[in-house]
Image 1 (spheres, one colour):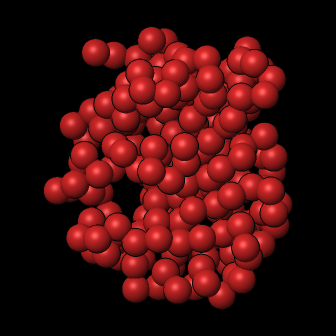
Image 2 (cartoon, helix red, strand yellow):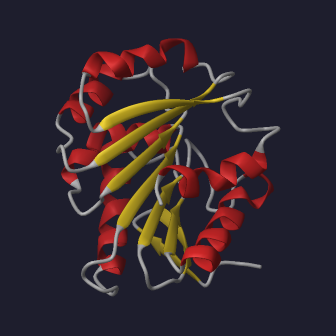
Length: 196
C-alpha cells in the first residue's frame, strides 16, 4: 500500500489518496513525515479514502520552514487540489501536535475549511499566538481540540474553555499519550469520530 500520488513543493512533501466526496488535509507534527511512525498517516489516509471516498492530502512538517510559511504552502496546495473536486464538497483539517498548533494560529485565514480537528497541540508554546488565532476563527468553522490524558498539554487544556467560543470545543482521549503510542487504532479513527 502507498499513496496514489506524491508532490514536493517549496520544501514540503505531500502524499495524496484520491476520493471525490471531500478533502481531508492532514498536517503532521514537528519534523513529521507523510508516513509517520508505523505508517500511521498512510493507514489513516487509506482508511478515509476507502470508507468515505474522501481525498486525503498528508503534509510533512520539516523543521527548516517557519510556521507561517509552512502552513501557507500546505493550504495553498490543498486549495489548488480542492479546486479539482466538486464545488460543494466538505473540506476538513486534522493537525497533529505542531500541525494542530498551526491550525489554531492560522486557521481563520482558510475559510474553505469547514471543520478543524487539532490533536495534542503544545499549549505552553506560543499560547498567545494560538489564542489570538482561535479568537479570530469564524463562527461557521467548527474546531475540536483533543488532548490525550497523558499528553504534556493535558493539564493546561482548560485554557480552551476560557476562550468562550461556541464553535470551539475540547475533548479528552482516555489513556492516550502525545504520540498515541499504545493506541494507534484510536488515532486512525479520530477524523471519523470528530470530523465526519
